[in-house]
Length: 145
Image (cartoon, rainbow, N blue to C red; front, side, top):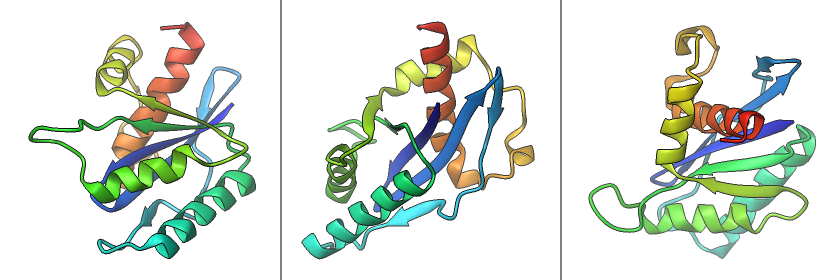
């Protein structure tokens, strides 16, 4: 199964592809690490974002998109642009989309820690949350947590 972990941060969607094959995690090369929507996004921009992400799903044969949930209110609440990005992803056709809570991610990582330092994965530091989201989902799915 190939999943795409997504962290929505401001007007960016940071992504990381991850798959589990024969008990080994693989991070395939990906042409995109981040998708950005302008702060004053209009419907044309959102459609372009959605189309670009849909093409990524098709090209890399992604089975599931896993989005890290953001609070709706409070100090760390997501902004309006982030919720537009989330809606655009959730409305994609031909791919399952799941939103996973930070608590579930933390619990999964606690039970199944990542044994490889982030610097050795070849990912950028801004992709760490997206990687952890995908990793936690695959471990949750594998062990039915």
